[in-house]
Structure formats: structure tokens, C-alpha cells
Image (cartoon, rainbow over all chains, first blue to last red):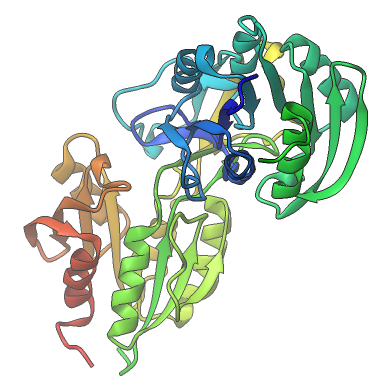
Length: 211
Length: 211
């Protein structure tokens, strides 16, 4: 890794439009991604910050790349990946999108409505297939079987590190985290603020050195 | 109307949860509702501000009532309506919600997914049925046949005033508006900021007097 590592960080939710007005999304604020970017900048990294619509400011100093949908985020990530040394997928990417996006806004009066959803592209998995020498880390939000589901994701996406937490983390000031490593590491990190978690994750990604 | 009118203003989007993490929503920021509340406060009104998750701050001085879903917003509006002199429905309420909300988070690996959507309760229509002496105003966001659809909504919801605009207004600093009145008024308001539109609407609702 070069003396000034270049990080690709994804942050925030994506929006999958049903029509020009409505979309499927989630309550991610982008605060975890922003905390990671701030910690990385403080350590002298160059940060490519690919973000959906955020409820927090884009951190000053990042190279910002605003996107809306999971497909937009994938396109941006694939474009930026070759130049980066490490990836942290902190975005809460929509797993599903409507099969079709309609041009007009559907009216309430038209009654019940069946919406066909299909899986979106898996961004970290796609980047994992192009991993090369890079270090990759991701997050897993699990409602049940936290450790087992997280470990499966770590291998499927060819991640080196994965932070697992539960939906209570969304929008919360602090949360309980589990850190899993490809090397077999399983560390209960306890309750941490998002910035403290960012410091732990950057320590394992880049080594515990600070400029 | 009393010397210090009490306004019920709804603002922002609602979120209709599919599961603990995902929801259907729209890109409303709540900026129009906030501008209306600020203008009403500046004119000496008491403001009950019923709002979904906002991308702007809740205006200082309102009586704030935070909600998530269309049903939550309806419940709050019905509770507050009897004490108010006027209503402005500026929220971008979800017209549809999932028929069922599942307890766990569905996995991407489970393939395509059919989501059953049903219409939500129509808040302004429900308030219209209890209108009494009150003045009611609403907004209509239309992708086609703007004036015709807006006029139909005005009558269906027993509104006195309705502001019609197109989806470009969402998140925009200014937009082009059409004002319709139960008395037959049709005024093209031209391009206005949200605060200027708030002033026009409060003029017609409360009369052009300022304290």
C-alpha cells in the first residue's frame, strides 16, 4: 500500500424508484460512512466517497460522488475501484428494486397494486471479483443469526473484514458491533460510537499507524 | 377565526415499512411545510406541526408532532383537528403501503419478490368530512393533467384552496405553482420560492393582515 492510501468508501442509503415520486429505501443516514471518511482523512488517506442521499453533510475533504440507485452506486464503485488501495462498503444498499419504473405517478384511487421486486446487483461481491491486492471491508445488518449470516457474507463477498450489527444501529448514536476477519478473527467490539468504530476498522485495514 | 389563529400543518414524507429496515417513501424534504410554519409563526399563529422524517430542521416555535407512517399522521391530525382554525396539508403522504410488514429482513438471495400494496387512508379527505367552520388547504403533485386532477382533488377533499405543482418541486429551491380555489379561482402563481408561496397561501387562508 502506498504511503498515502486511497480509500473507496460507500455511504448512505440508495433509492430504487417505483415511479417519478416514490421509491424503496431505508433509514440509513450515512453517518457511519461519514465517520469512516473523517477518520480516514485524519490519517492522511485520499477518500473517494460514493454516497446516496444523506441525512448528514458530506465530509469536507473527500472526493464526493453522489448517486441515487444501487445500479448508480455499482457503476461509480467499479469506475473508482482500480485506483484504490482499500474499500469500505458502509452504504445500506437496497437489496431489491422494482422490476419496472413507471413514467407517471400511480393514483390512490386505482386500488391495490402488486409491485414486482427483483434483487439489485451486489456491489461488494462485484468488487470482490476484482479484488487483486486490495483490502476490502463491509458491513452486515442482520435481524437474526447475526454471526452466522455475517460470516457467510464475508466469504461470499471475498471480504477481509466485516462488521456485523443489528437494525437498531440505523440512526443511533452508538451501537454494539461484532468484527469478523477472513483470518478467523471474531471480536465483540461492544458498544461504540460510529467514529470509534471507524478507528477500530481503519486500524485493522491500514495498520494502527497515524501520520 | 380567533385573533390568534391555530393552524394544523402537515409536512414531509411518510414512510411505509416493508420490514424493519426497508420502506416506501418519497423525496419530500419537508421544506415547504417548514416554510409555511415559519410564515404562520411570523403572523402570530399557533402552529401544530405534524411531520414525517424531515431533511430540514423542525421550525423553532411550532408545537411539533413527529410521525412515521400515513396512519400515524392521520391519527395525529384527527386528534389535533378539533382545536384548529385552519389546516394546510403540505405533507407528501404515501398513497400506498405494503399490505403486510414482515418481522425479519428479507435476503437478496431469495430471488424476485411480489409486494402487495394497498391504498393508505386519505388524510385531507378524512379531515374534510369533519371540516365544520375551518379553512382547509392542500397540495397536489401531478405528473399529468395538472389542473384537471388538482380540481378533482379540491372537491373530493372538500378543500377551500389547493396548490398544484409537478414533481420537479420536490427538493427544488423554487418551482412553478397553480392556485385553485373552491370559489373558482385559478391563479398561475408563476415561479416562487417556498417561503413566497407560503405568504401567498396564508394571505388567502387568513387574509392579508400581518400583526
